[in-house]
Length: 352
Image 1: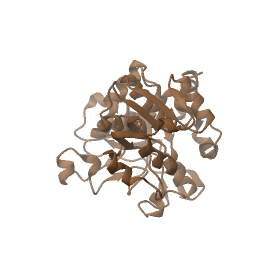
Image 2: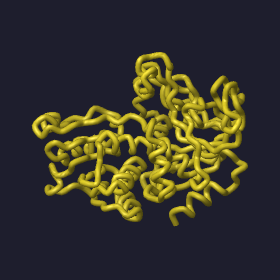
Image 3: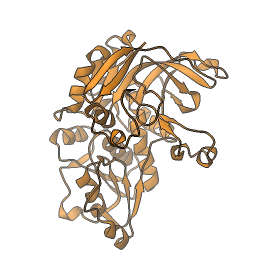
Image 4: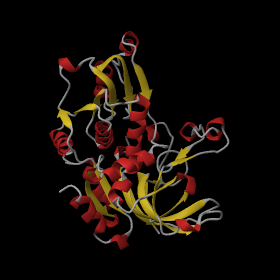
């Protein structure tokens, strides 16, 4: 099979590798599409804090956002899974610690995350193995493109849950990227008055096309007025701004991941205005809720994809991922050549 191997900064190759074998309670999956995100860009250009902190090192198979079809079964798996379209979360845990035994697998201290953390290869291969427990079956009404985006955007649902957002809330979302637009659409679906802030004109245009209220940046009138604030960019300035926007007794979710220390963070403001700050890790446990919103039309994930690149055009995919001129945040790689042009046609037709 073919795999996407990163061997050094800006060195990504499509290599031949042995196909994996599913073990007990695993299935073999033919990957249809692979999503590329900012984390993958950090691996590609060498800037990732995961590399800097030696949580992962070259060479490794990249990728953690995917959709595929079950083509093989390990022992003790349901035969009905064969042929099903699935996507899955990327955590691989010990299964023995107190967090795993209590069902809190995102907190497992010995966890790996495929394509991100630890020794498990990423999803950037034509064939991958995944535990049945990590999978979500994809309804026929959902496109491959939307299914590929479930893994990152489920974290937005986690953020809304942690903030206990209701229709009575005023919600600010900082960043109109993949996470921010998913969070804002879901908050608006709950009935909350939602405003998205992003300095990039193209990002604001996309947000408006999704029916969202958008501003370039907060004004003085916005300070200390929002019941719930979601920082979805990881930008250091936005992380500082999130606290400034929160009203007394408000809640802040840090959904984006800053890759450097944030100087000037207003910790005193958290105390003085009795603000609750949540760090949000992963969307495990929130996939079904997100699938329902996508099926209902309340959350449009197809519209977030800029382009689907064939695997043979991998360098162009990473170059476009680096580009600041993208109209839409997501880049997707077509891993299964048997799809033909179906993936591109679906993603583009969905929002044009």
